Image 1 (tube, chains in turn yellow, blue):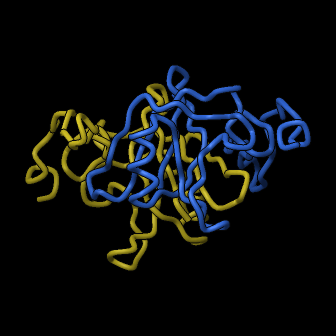
Image 2 (cartoon, rainbow over the protein chains, first blue to last red):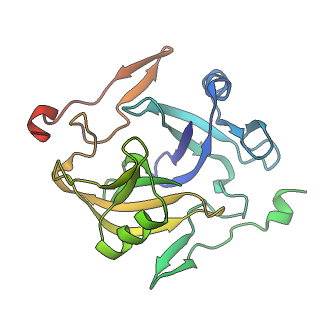
Length: 112
Length: 112
């Protein structure tokens, strides 16, 4: 199921990833966001490589029981693998997607 | 693709629904959230029955080009078909999902 991560304090939507039952259970148990990587077909402990762990503050389920909303503290202030604060940095302007948010840290420095 | 609707001003995540290319194009063209209903297999102009239209303020795309984030004004202050402000009204407490947000308007009065 889709899992939305929202930053505590700022309310910014950081990213959307996927969870299966095991990922959800581990997220609750370990108090940090753990997703199911559909591309790598395995559990993904957010921050396991980058250190950009998402500490769990609150967890919600939607009316249809098929979407999760996480409230998290984003360690390092970077959620996106591009080195930006969050993944939604492309804004539609005059029918074109424009990158409007800056890279905070070079991904080459994040993933060594 | 998943489309997340976030309320302008409050920053609350209202709901997640789905969009195809046509829904996205119409959302931009008409300036209101239009989703693809996977259960009814047709376009869903949010608010078409309830009047709870979502007026488009901003639209973002994520790093992988597969998730949309809408910033919307929620007319009527109710996004959820249960009559609540938003769809994420179940909170995990001691391993149980507890309904923590109140119904603002009876759905029977919304959908006549």
